Image 1 (cartoon, rainbow, N blue to C red):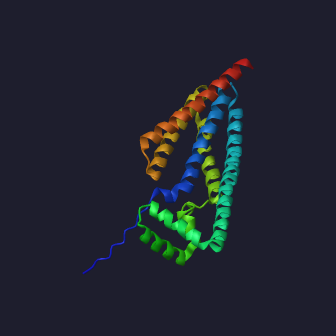
Image 2: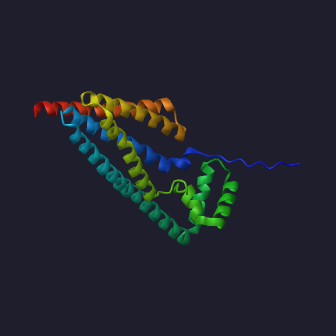
Length: 233
């Protein structure tokens, strides 16, 4: 008796669009807001002023991330549409040249020319544009740009990340505010780096070191600038 076995594989590349936007948004939210709070607090500003600066950073940062991500990913989507339109015209005007192009791609991937020709013919008969989009242009359902998804994910995760240092300001004594904000933010960055690495199936240690090192550098430099500015003023 034959037993049917359905093997389904899930790869990180399928999550790369929203995962990239989520990690980038949350990381920016923590680092930029914590850095601003550390800089303002180090300049001897009152707690209310620190909270105001942090809140402004959250709102402006979330909107900026959404707008920037939308424009960036929309540009990618426009380029993909232009390439597909060009490919569609070429399939009509030069079908044999496009067939030979597919055959060449499959030969370079290791197929014999006869097998490559058979594969190219079968895929072309089924959906020529999809075959060229996937194998010639590298465009597929997984990698297709989605501007609204990227923009929304970036804005929400930025705001979530920025809330961390803001909440710390509310519960921390003013005398140790800068230190507590930096430590709490580093802990969240470490957790974020770990989760991002696990979700993307990447080395955890490398991601952890990278995200905490650059986060600490940004916050320390901004705090130093705030301290210097406060002393001058």
